[in-house]
Structure formats: C-alpha cells, structure tokens
Amino acid sequence: MKTLFTSEAVARGGRSGKITSPDGLLDVKLGNPLSPGEETAGPNPELLFAAAYSACYQGALMNAGKAADVSAEDSTVRVLVSLQEDDSEGFHLAIEVHAKIPGVEKSVVEDLMKSAHVSCPYSKALRGESAVTLVVD
Image 1 (tube, one colour):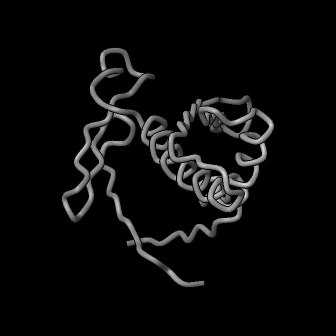
Image 2 (cartoon, rainbow, N blue to C red):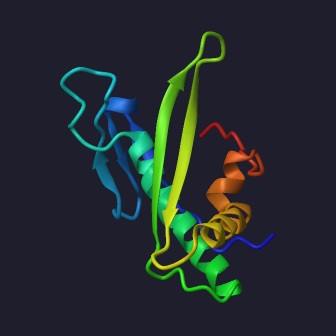
C-alpha cells in the first residue's frame, strides 16, 4: 500500500478542549453538547467527523458518477453523526449519509451512493477495514 500523505492533529482537554495541528492549519476550540454552557463554544468532535466524512464521501460520489458517465459535480452530501451510549460497552457513533444529485433519477443516485460507499476511505474505516496502531509517545 502506498501512503499519499499523512495528516496530524493534537487534542488537549478532551471534548471541552482544543484541537491543533503542528502545521498551524487547524486551531479549534471545541464545544461540548454534553456540558451545559459549552454547547456552542465551538464544533464538537462529531461535527468535525461529519464534515470530513461528507467531503470525502462527496469526492467518492463524484468519482462513481464519472465512472458511470453521470455528472455528480452539483451533488450535495449531508452526513449526520450521532453519539450514542449503550448499557455495557460505552459509546458508539450512528451515521447517516444523504446525497442529492439534481436531475438524476433516485435509482441512479442510489447505485452511485453504493459505489461511493465501497471506495470512500471513511466508509471503509467504519466497516473496520482500517488499521489502528496504538503508540505511546
């Protein structure tokens, strides 16, 4: 497997803290919907994940459209990420991916979405196909 690039982020303070990147491109104060008064201090981790997933998935959708000779350049992708708590294992994410391609039949959009879901790295990661390496610094 060939690595194309690597991004790095550093979190301090957990859900009510801050996220930065060493290159200075990211410097975000987080908001915490679970802590009264901190809900709107900034984006929460699930919002950031939804934003990243929607951008990545739309790229995969446009690639799927190109392969099928269907223009998906005017598409929109909306991702909802919910934090859920269960009774035994802690927390989980529930995710919905919505897509719209103006002027394209629903069945065609569904097929393109299925194809995009196969190739999108975020979709793959959610299926457990990404390796996670744990390292103590």
